[in-house]
Image (cartoon, rainbow, N blue to C red):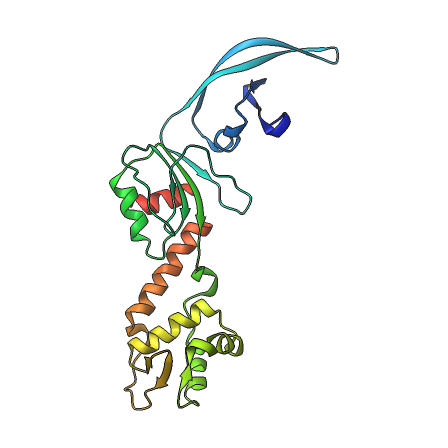
Length: 245
């Protein structure tokens, strides 16, 4: 991009040993798209550029088009959302996408099937992957055997444990991220190891022994970690194939 506010674009195209600059005035907003597009066709006019006593041929872009679905990586804090493209944000209301041929995937839902359904029911010509993840389980993991054992050993010492007010302290003591700790407690409740009433957790000391893997919550968490890893770390093509598959 170039000019005040990065308003304009300058591209360099080559064929064989010849290379030319292509200038697109007022098209700076397409910098991300053009940089990541594989099949870009340009309509240009030929002009002469004179600067500091130098004369060179320069191409001026008139129009552009792309073939096939275009996939753009705009993950990262500083990435700007494209203008005029519907934004898919699962933390709010999902927009009507029936007439849209482009989409911004802004947030990733904990249940990836919500996002997969949209991609399997509709074809888009352009997809922008922002992929904000509210609860990043792919960073916390789904709980190791040692973490579950340490949690149980700790809460076993208390007749009652008020998780409404002591959850943060418990997370700090165990060195487990709070979002993961909540899931681990839910797993214990599902397996009958603890009961929770009005925010107070009680260990069922006579509960029969069961494997953590028997918990549906635990199995879903493992899948969520795997899905989030794909959406956070995969290439745009890998993400697109995953959602369409």
